[in-house]
Image (cartoon, rainbow, N blue to C red):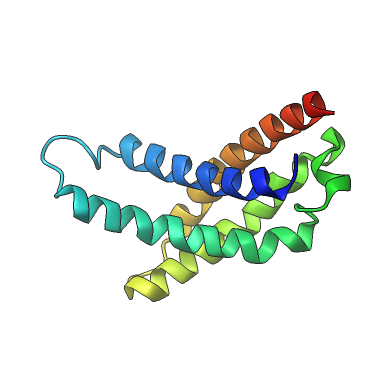
Length: 131
């Protein structure tokens, strides 16, 4: 397996973390705005996080075979997300012209690091079985 699976999986992991975050806050239940508004709000989080992830992940070697195939380097995805999420929160604040909320950056970093590590762990297992 290679980047053809890894990159869409990264995007899917970010999407899932975003949807779970909105669901955890009750943003998609009864009394919520229209589906279109919800999707726009999700995009306002998901898009900056994706951009920051794909800007920073290569600096951590997260698309190099030697790191993606070794379980000893699984920590790199969480570590990279701890930098990507705050950058995403800043980008989101600039795009929406809204205040940058530090606690949101912390929560986004922790949940995204967990989600990305989970996905990268699954990728690692699938990659080992494919050999």
